[in-house]
Image (cartoon, rainbow, N blue to C red; front, side, top):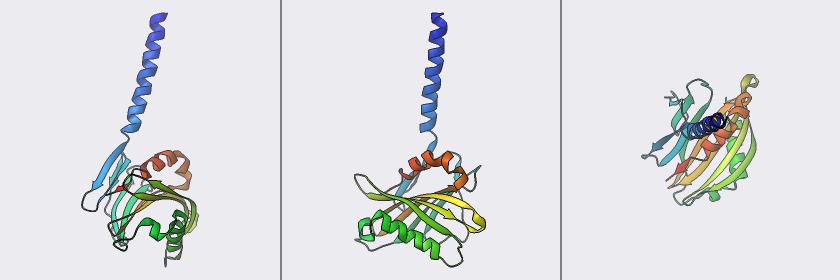
Length: 183
């Protein structure tokens, strides 16, 4: 009886340790030394070449199975000595991005800012922005973004999924968006 109990405990402990290690290994690292940023992304996502990408798009990844789930890094110029705080508060920057999306000619998208917060590290400040986006034909999406300024560049890291999948991927996406770093 005691042996059976110990065997069950060892099996449960082993499965618990396996699930913890699988959770940590579910993310892979991407770094662009040339552009000065890095992030973790979910295993099973692949980089894709986007023809006719918007200006400033540096990299795009998408899920191999859920192809509508994607991430991108967009880099644009700001003043050499400009900081993220110079661009405004998280909410102000979030609304400015939202307005840009909503006013973009021919996009037919409607974005709504849900949340905006500050994340600070030892070396930089990031704004974490959350949006709901309505595309043509009433397609609903959910986006998370991390925005940073460094060396005269504005970096925008964006994760996007269908609204119907948001609850399933919310924790993963929140973890991933916080791994984005510029250097």
